[in-house]
Length: 502
Image 1 (tube, rainbow, N blue to C red):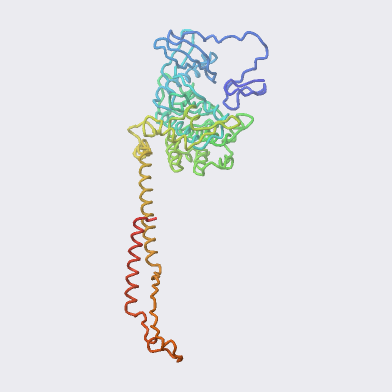
Image 2 (cartoon, rainbow, N blue to C red; image 1 turned 60 degrees about the vertical axis):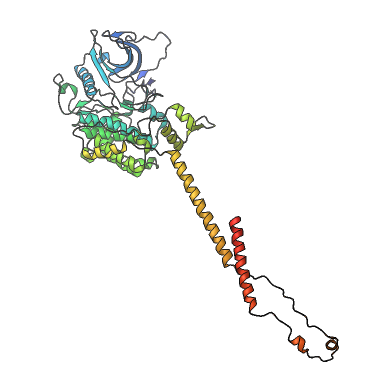
C-alpha cells in the first residue's frame, strides 16, 4: 500500500500520484528498523537559516521550519528536491516562484523574503511561517462549508489572485492544498495563497529565464481536478484559467465534491474539456441561486465566457454577498476557540453548538473598535472608480449603541402608557356622561284631607269637596328639582373620578 504524505490517504501500489493533490505517494513502513533522518535537520543554510523541523513534502520541494540566526525569527524554508537540482527547467521554475511571489505585496499572498543557493547545491526559498490548516484539510473534515464561510474564504483567495493578475502573474496551480487558512487566538484569521512554483509571468520575460525551458507546447502542467480546459489541452493561458480553478475550488467548498473526477488524470482532463458540470444546487439545495449561477459561469468551457480575471470574479462575488446579506463574507477576522465556547453550548455528543446571533453580538462588543474591517484590494492608480466608490463605503459600519437604544425604548413605552391611560380616562368620562341618568325618586307625602266627624260619617260615596281639592305635586317645581339633581350628580361624579381615576 502507498499513502499520500499530504492528505494521508492510502492507495494501491499501482497508483504513483495522489489523485487529490498529485503528490508522489510513499510506501508504508512495514519493516521495523532505523528510519534515516533528514540530512537537512539541524543544518544551517548559508550561515543564516538553521533547519529545525520538516513540515511537509510537495511536488517540487520540501518545506521546513527554520530559524533566522541573525534576528532569531522563525521562518518557513522550501528547499528544491535534489532530484530537480540538475534539471534546468525545474531550477528556473523554482526561481520564478520566488520572483513571482516576491513581486506580490498582498495580505492574502504568502510573503517571500529571501532566495538562495548553498555551496552544497541546495536551492531554497524563505517565506513567512504560517500557523493553521490548508483548505484541503478543512474541506476533507468539514465540507460542505456553510455558505457565508465559503464566500469569505473565496473573497480572500480571489483578492490574492487578483493582485497576481494585476502584477502579470498567472498562478496555474490553484487548488485547496495551496490555500492556507491561518487561525490563531491572538491574530485574525487570514487566507494565504501559496506555491507559485509553476506560475508564469504573463506580461514580461525575465532576462535570466528561458521560456522554452519552463513550458513546452502541448505540455499539461498542474493538478487535473482544478485545471481549466485550455490548460488540459496545453493551450495558451490567460487569467481566466485561474478563474476556472477558483470556480472548481468554490464548487468543492459548497458541495464537498469536485465537478469532474476520474480514475486517471487523462480521464479528468477529458471531462473538463467536454462534459458539462452539474449545478451545485442539485447537490446542496441550500446554495443560493445567485452563487449557483456564478459558479457555473466560472466553469464555462470557453475563457471568454468566464469572468476575465480574478478581480472581475471577486467584484461579482462581493456584490452577491452584499445582496444576500452575508455579513461574514466581508469580515477578515475569525472567532477564536475561547469566543466560540463563550457563545456556544456543548451537546450531549460532545459537539459545540454555536449561536450565530450571540456570536455576532459578542464580537461586536469585544472588538477594539465599533467598526468592522472589510476586505478591500490595495488601492492602485489604475483601479476603476466604481470599485473605489463601492467598497470604501463598506469599510466602516457603526454598531448600534445598545444603552441609547434601551433608553429610547423606555421613553417610548412611557409615552404609549400615558396615551393609553388618557384614552381610558376620556372613554370612562364619556361613558359616564352618555349613560342615562336616573333622577332620584323623591317621595312627597300627600297631605291627607282633614276628616271631620261629619264628613267621615257621611254615607255619600262621592268624594268630599275637601278631598277633591287635595294638594298634588305642582308640575312646575318638579323639572327644576330634576335639573338640579342631574347637575349635582355629575359634579359629584367628576370629583370622585378626579380623586380616584381608576
